[in-house]
Length: 122
Image (cartoon, rainbow, N blue to C red; front, side, top):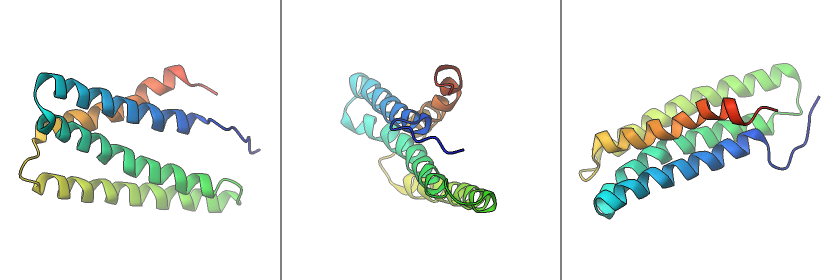
């Protein structure tokens, strides 16, 4: 059964991830300067972009057969992992990126999934 919801749980999670990346980057901006805020913002983007791709991939397959949905799920997850690794590889090559703060932004954005389990139950 497919339920059409204008503001689905995954939409809430992606918006919360964007908000979390913004909050973490703002915290580093207050502590330091704009250059110190870029690393956690990039770390947040490394989490948000692949997650958004995966959500779109599964969303587009939602009305298909079960095997098509499962195939979209596995393909989306595989590409999500590859995309995450590729984005990390690109980010660590940038000379001005601070890896610990990049990782802080990445982990903070990924932590949204854990909190979402408690707040957005459908």
